[in-house]
Length: 184
Image (cartoon, rainbow, N blue to C red):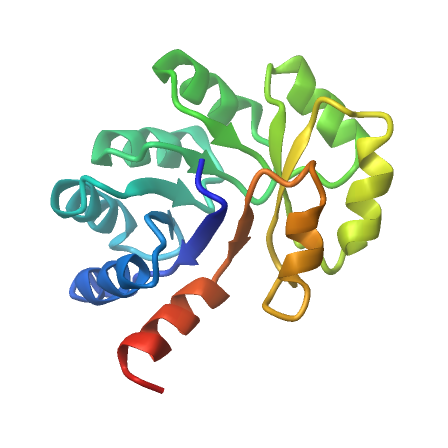
């Protein structure tokens, strides 16, 4: 997995090229396209076909049906805001990485029981940020985290300095990349 996982919301398929090109131009070769919009599966399929050098995943996947649609579209990894056993099972059957949102010890233990050792920590700012991740790492030294929500340029270096951070997720990567491309 790349160190930066942009959370990408594509409202219209026509936005896909602009956003993915901006990310690539900014040195980011990964995109978590969220299942928050009607064209999500279509955007994932388009991205996988036209950007084969990028790691394209599906985000905000909250049930098995969405997971199956994302995998049929070509998603290379699945991210959820919470932990879904059904999604975990579909991913396991298909050999696809699943990064569920886990913020409590109970959720992390459930992820571990499912064989998952890298989890999304969302929303990071609401659930205690880096201090919470450090505290959770003590009883779960085998777990890596992908903090998302409340991570930005003001605190990203602190998160990246912690060895239990697998990657950083966030929509701010998209905003920055588009602004650079537009010369702002």
